[in-house]
Image (cartoon, rainbow, N blue to C red):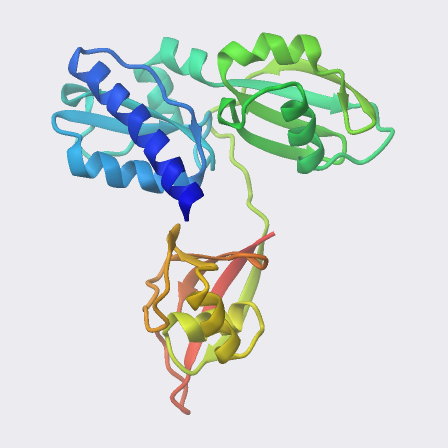
Length: 269
């Protein structure tokens, strides 16, 4: 919990600085944020954003790691929605500097994983908040979304990923670029739509053990630690169980003839 409190404190400092810039009609993107950090950021902005607008941008629609843009209210869209293409159209110079896309291709000597790419990039001394999504396209190639200021450094210094030699080049992704997230479908029936019952099903354990996981603070509901067994997750809720994985609840409302609830969910692979 202390680590997350420190994470929030640092994020709040960053957002306050962006808000001050927006008040002066300036805009610059913050660091790349994880989905959890984006959740925190939205909470903070709703509490004290004032006459400003904001959007998240990671280089393509559906990106997981995104940079926060804060700008004056007059630039806000009426529907509040900013697509990646829309952001590039509104702020071409800012978005180009904020997110660069690099193709990293191995020789074919060995299979390369997301962990291989991330480890090699961090091994160059690059901070995680300078890196967006790493999209593994096949066993030997990935797209790296990164801070534009980091691109030249990566182009020059990233020569190996894992034990394989790689070639790095700049590329562009079109407005229709999408990433299909790999998910494992889960279908089950549960005694109750409560959190403890759902966690029990998701991680294939007893309800008593699920309650213990919740009491120990090992379960997050929508990126917040939840210690209430009787909490009722809503459709679309994200549940993370430490040591087991992350899940999305698709539905848990329909009842069977025996009074149980049909659970439909998916686990991130």
